[in-house]
Image 1 (cartoon, helix red, strand yellow):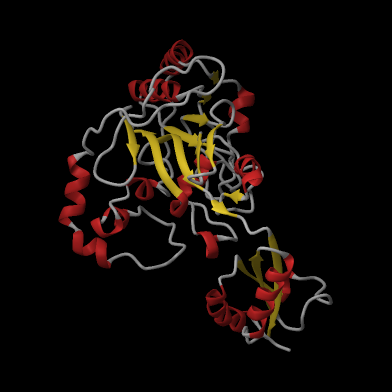
Image 2: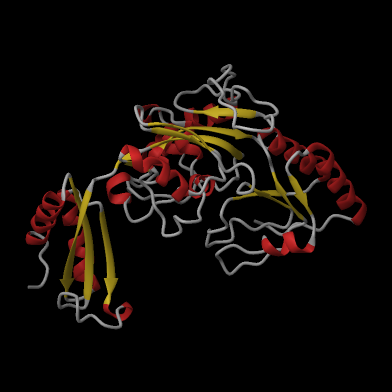
Length: 363
């Protein structure tokens, strides 16, 4: 994100007045609020003009409108766990964790959940536990990262070998474009304004019934895909954890023209997320861990791909220089930690033994 000149004092005052007048949520230009959002989990430091904690999608739209009018950039922020400065900005920071942090619906029959962007991942996972379900992607920051942030950067986590990235587990997205236009992103070349788009009354979260219409997706996006079909089909590597850049290949007809998937990982540059429907997966009742020792990191890396045929839940590596005391581990200079699942502890342990027997590890 390029530096942006600080507005003149009268422009800043006008922006503050506009936000205070049109936003029902929290508008805070105080030094304390600005200092708290100067940084995320990265080494970057950028001081914003102010922080807005929107109450609903109309607050987001009002904030976008005010920032457009006054020429001020805006950056969405979840838990601030990003490590590349994505949650910092010199304009207005949208803090979704204050008000737009609800689990709106969890349907164990369809294994889906409807969430607001500020919902913390562990809150969703805890709600899914009674149904034997979980959200597959699980970054190490699961206790504080939010679903909006995970969708924004297409988070993975240790269990991505079993359940994929956030994009693999996202069904639909409700977003606001930079001009404030609402879109419901799903499969196919139709988008729609989220049903019930409007002010949310104080109290329990509203439950919209579904998309209210299907205005066409911008013609320029369809033209982009139609014009570059060959490049989109050949220019993207087939990596299961490819999370960098725009996933334009998700718009190919053979991939279902999945607008929601294409939006994942765009870091808020294509619009602002206001709601999402995500897919849940069945969580194995029991788990076991196979720890495999290898001579060095290269041997461990060579062996990792071969373990995937046993359908492990995780395959994580660690080198000896990260282990102060390896006395309790198998001998070696590097290790793979492979988690397996089962209906009960015996089945999980059996799968771990099968995996270990074919892993080519040191005795």
